[in-house]
Image (cartoon, rainbow, N blue to C red; front, side, top):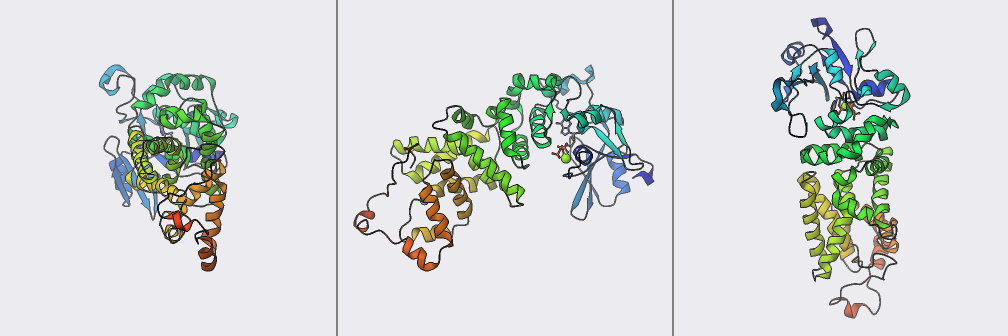
Length: 405
Ligand code: ATP
Ligand code: MG
């Protein structure tokens, strides 16, 4: 880049994380070259984006995003660019590096690292904020949240991830403006929710979201049950699920959005399913219908792609099958592709007191037992065989949530 006579800086989260001694997730580059000019310099470059053109430079499997400096125009020239509540509809005006810095969200995200002389360029007092561990929104906080309400989620996400505090003036409007998240497109919120809960600090993030009354904007049904907790239950389930996700990430194990969303929506699904059972549906039918309804409802706010909502439904539906421990059925369940996720889910339920620990333990043992032991474990108990065909197996009543199937 610089050989071709352009300026090029590393910018954004990569610089922030480097300066904090953390491992950067990715690097973005900002330049004064226009996208077409970037393309001329790099043969391995593709231009993307319609609203704002970006250059993607491919290095093997790595993609470096190269963006031209742009400005955040706020004069009266084009009034049509704001929606009623002040949300930005367009932001594709090229600008200087300083303007590029000011349109960013937080001061610590607006540091530029000059590749040529290894200097850090700071137009926004980002360095002192970085040192003090403060997230400070650039410009007037309420205006910036109105322009893009997702910035409230980003504030919480960075606070949890970096252990920073949100500057008091930037913190206050969040309590009042959470509603604006309702206007954010559902597809974008899905992406943001993944970043919130799959960054390794989901539990902390969740607690902060609740503190700022933002969780209810994202998962209203779930939130309702969190505030009406019964005997310590729903809260622990979501907490444990998120903790489990964090632990898996720390251990380098894979995590899937399907499991995460299955956890986050379980309580509304379970409650609805119980109501449907009370109305006479079979447990499996009830669970399937409840799953569909809750996913449908949730998708208006946060769109969950099919490739995740299908496995979510399976995880939920399989919960019911864990109750069948006799004969061939447990063997069959083991060979389900979704067995493992559903089993992990059962263990979580047991840990939070909503499912039988004994049942979870049985499955823990069963799946690793020898064939001989498995056959012994799944052999119908004496005396129950005569009635087993007609009667649905009933579990012992549990200390709480007895209406669970
Ligand atoms: P992460 O570590 O999660 O990638 P990041 O700071 O790099 O954090 P990105 O979403 O990758 O976040 O965005 C890159 C940069 O673009 C940010 O550092 C910030 O300067 C700018 N940016 C991103 N989203 C916004 C936004 N909604 N409003 C203003 N600036 C933003
Ligand atoms: Mg980034």
